[in-house]
Amino acid sequence: MLTISGLSKVYPTGTAALKNVSFTVDEPKVVTIIGPSGAGKSTLIRCINRLVEPTSGRIVLDGVDILALNRRDLRKARRRMGMIFQEYNLVERLTVMENLLSGRLGYVGFWRTYRRKFPPEDLAAAFALLKRVGLSGYQSTRADALSGGERQRVGISRALMQQPDLLLVDEPTASLDPKTSRQIMRILVELAHERGTPALVNIHDVGLAQSFADRIIGLRGGEIVFDGPPERVTADVLTAIYGEEDWSTTIRRSDDETEKPDHRRSEGEDSLVRESLA
Amino acid sequence: MAASSSAQAGDALRWQRIRTIENPWVRQGLAALAVVYLAWSLTTLEINWTRVADGLPRAVNLVLRMFPPDFSRGSLLFRGTLESVQMALAASFFGMILAVPIGICGASNLVPKPVYLAARAFIILSRTFHEIIVAIFFVKIFGFGPLAGVLTLLVASTSFISKMLAEDIENMPPGQLEAIRATGASFPQLLVYCISPQALPRYLGVSIYRLDANIRHSTVVGIVGAGGIGQVLAASFSRYDYDFSLAILLTIISLVFLGEFFSNWVRNQLR
Image 1 (tube, chains in turn purple, yellow):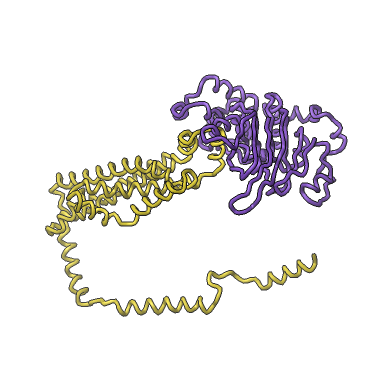
Image 2: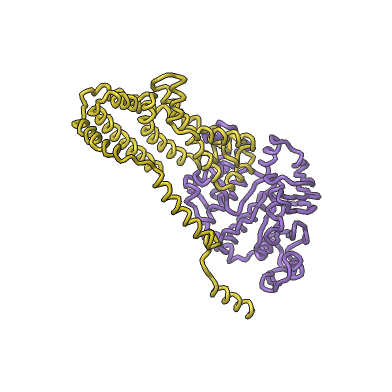
């Protein structure tokens, strides 16, 4: 369970990126965070694992006060949080397998890291994940030889190798084409549900957020202006988050909205994904 | 809408290229000043034409006495050359090793500010003086011979390779570092799992280039007494053994040529 209360961040430049943000994630659900550029989405995600140091507030993950941790304990807390990035951020000159295994760095010592001697159960988990995301046989391919969609699958697998209690996902699809974006979101959401891992997903594509989220948080100017199920995201809500605009083409059609989350995906799309993953 | 587009059209008509110096008076004035200074410095240079005239036959004489090159003192030539190569190899090898910690400490995206400033100060300081000046210092301290030469080249190699390494690390995309940190990796793990694979090829390339440069410089530092073929060359000049000098010069040329060839070959293999 993740509890954030009164979280604020002021950058040295004077920009207040987050202003008194509070919310709780108490179910293994996919929570998407939407909002305009500069609303503080990336800052929020990075405050949770302290890649960005918050100015004030409290972040508690499963009873651990993240902001009170020293360096050593912070590293322990970070292994419990898998992070997925917009630009994938794979180590380009390492192989796919090495990139997956980097998810275990928090658990193995320096010499094992240096000699790439990971425990057999880690290797087994890595091979299973490669198969699950449709990258079987890619273990020895160098990361810089992969396409964007393939890289993001490696990025997702690396985060899941940590067996995290929480997934922090920063614009996972912003560098991908629309079809690949949907595939990546689907893999991500399926894996999060399968493993019962809650996920916080920054995303600027409102349509994608509505299609895949269990809950949507709207951020504007560093403040939460909406928090609710995707069905409740209306033109008025979007205006509150982004400002005045004609939202009629952005919002998911109303016949989708009445469906239950699990039935949201159509059969056709699913088989399409399986095909392209095979 | 219409008003703004017509305003843009007006801008387009008035467009002209942006000059580095906007004011035409300042621009033309500076150009004129440069011409005046050039003319002034030419007139104040005291070129003694009689000395130039005297020098010309001496130059002809020198070149004539250089031919044919004298390779008869082969063992002296060989030992000098070998010493130069050994100096270059030793300096490059230890420079490569010393450059790793200094280079890492000189990368602002990895270390705290004081460490960064200390490493950068070291790099700047050791790059301030030309090899010849450093060599003179070391010859004064340790006496004539290759030790002074090796130390000179070592200082130069360490600062050069660590500067290149530091800049290479600083230019790494921050995302990869962020991602590895986010897994809970420690700093040493970050070094061997992220920075090392990304920076290694260029580090090796720079080191090999430095070996090539050291071979060239090792022939020079000898002239001030720091060992190697350069010292033999200086001695031959002072003894007016110009034919032997030419033999040494030809040896240096082929040595540098071989060094460059080797360095290019290795760097091609690294790609």
